[in-house]
Amino acid sequence: MSTLVTQAPKAALSRPRGPDATEPPEARGLRRDQVRMLVARPHALEHALFHHLSDILAPGDLVVFNTSATRAAAVDGIRAGGEKIVVHFSTPGDDGAWIVELRARDGSGPFGDACAGETIRLPARSTMQIVASHPDPSLGRGSRLWLSQLEVSGSVETWLTRHGRPITYGYLRGRWPLADYQTVFAREAASAEMPSAARPFTRRLVTEMVTRGINFAPIVLHCGVSSLEAGEPPQAERFRVPPATAWLVNATRKAGGRVVAVGTTVTRAIETVANSDGGVSSGQGWTNLVLGPERPARAVDALITGWHPPGASHLLLLEAVAGAELVQDAYDAAVTSGYLWHEFGDSCLLLPPRRSLRQGAPRALPATFPE
Image 1 (cartoon, rainbow, N blue to C red):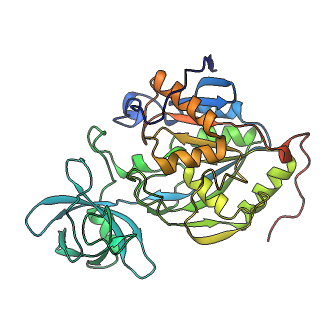
Image 2 (image 1 turned 180 degrees about the horizontal axis):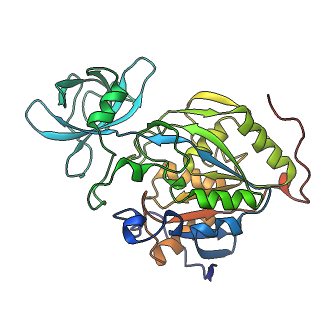
Image 3 (image 1 turned 90 degrees about the vertical axis):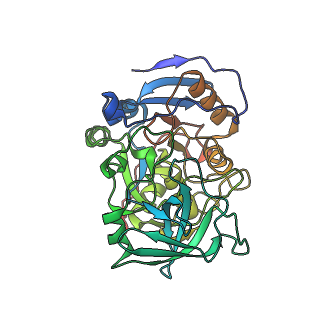
């Protein structure tokens, strides 16, 4: 099923990343759940395939997944001087304004010379007015993200469905349909980019895991654009943790099982509603939570993630769950062994030591279920 590997010597995570996945695994002749998966435990790293997850996790463990679906959030635009660009629609505000990113069509990066007051022409005789830089409105120029107001016919969501496409970056070869950017759990189309840690799951794998006694529970967190610059904190995102999911997390912890988050989005949502003892309540709204040394994970025991450039906020979240040493060992092994990066790439399962609360023999789940 899997292969033990010797831990590679430690090296800085700022070193060059591994090879990029330039196309979906299906285009390489693989099922989604046949991508490689590095299983990282303290002092033991294993090479496996993603569908081996049903053998690696244990009965009584809880897998928490994100039901947010990916919207067609990239739209072609033209600046006042005739320059052709791509607009990435990140997050709608409660007041109808949108946070957007302006990028070059060749995927080389965001523009540094955009400014407040600029008007962008969009398809179907629509326009977008740049209102202010985000999150710091005092920047008149040079921001990566902008607050904008749109003039479109009908709702923005319907307009994006007609004129948008999935957000892509320069490492991809060709364009792929929106269906390739949806996970098996996708239900609510409101993420600018795919919650990609869940992409390798298939209905067959989920069924196999459930029959083996591994439980599943949903949350919702709508992802904004993922192209954070160095030192940039994660943006506020909408989330929802249902009462039944909060109950299952608490029951799993009490029974001795592991709470396994599928991706950083799930980790952020669960930890937003976790108290200092790791108990979880239901909740919804906006989260600004930044996990790291001053705020380690309290409720999440393990993490399924893809391989992405180790930017500061992403790396700190992984370390908040698994610890810096285990994350470093995993990245070292991934680079050495040629794991593929980004949304169509390979996976990692971080399994740090269990907390003392969950050690010992499992107990029965509580009988009272939330109404």
